[in-house]
Length: 64
Image (cartoon, rainbow, N blue to C red; front, side, top):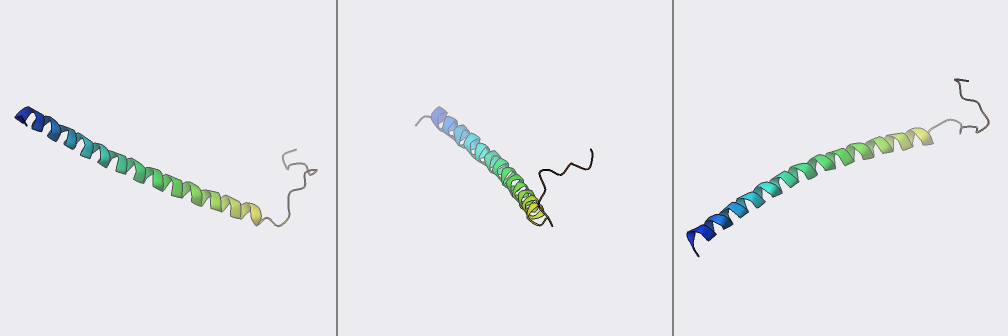
């Protein structure tokens, strides 16, 4: 192998390693966002199931 080929391969490996590190960072951020959204969804589900009485479709909202 020529020195040029080795140099190009080293550059590609360095680029790929940096790319993988960036992807890991983005996936970690997305994972945290998904966990936060899931917790919010669970909270909303809990609020809707813990209502004392179901909503009456014929009842007028309080702002009328």
